[in-house]
Length: 107
Length: 107
DNA sequence: ATTATATATTGCAATATTACGATGATAAAC
DNA sequence: GTTTATCATCGTAATATTGCAATATATAAT
Image (cartoon, rainbow over the protein chains, first blue to last red):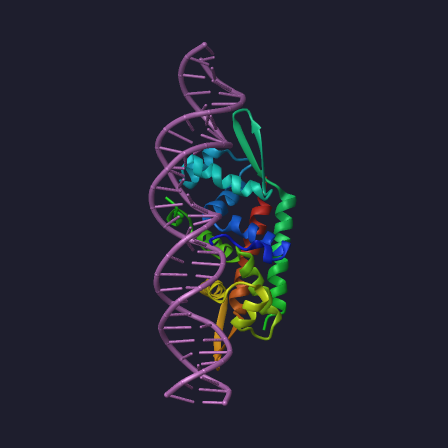
């Protein structure tokens, strides 16, 4: 096969896994950390800072955008990406709950 | 290429991404949740409960083991898997730090 | 209008992941 | 010793991910 059998799991299991997948690449970790340190952020910066080709950065940004963690607004020719704080906090909470629940019932 | 360029990122970025990758599959989320609800856990149970073939479950368990999140001890012919609480708490802390740091500096 | 700059999209190659049948290893039960 | 039960490993097919060159798009600057 090769594809995950998502249908045999719950929605929240799939959602958490999906979110984890976005964080499952050092480039995307690095991108999120960099954006959080800037007032705003343009792709060119990321290409220089991170050291991957422009299309690759663009793809990674898209992965992060897909789960609603980023929103970008064009300011002229520059695209300023920003973290969606609401979504960020929600995700943080989801991970927190998972870690806490598993740990509390742990054998 | 197809392989991540891990060498251009920091150790902690790679480690967090690596851990996220382990959580990036609903089967592994489900396995961890199930083990936490049991006194201990044997592979056969997981095969029945989750609904994936035994070799597939075994592979997923191995992924989780690789980052030290599980330790299994044989009790006769049964292998009892247990969550490594120390490692679990350390991972929880790593995710907590990441989420908090990014959020605090967020634009 | 033309050129330069910034980002997205397409197409493709290399590699990784997911899943399972078949087989192997080990220990309990008989 | 043979059978049964439990788990791991091997081999392999299907699919997903990663990365980049080439190209497209869109705005700014000239």
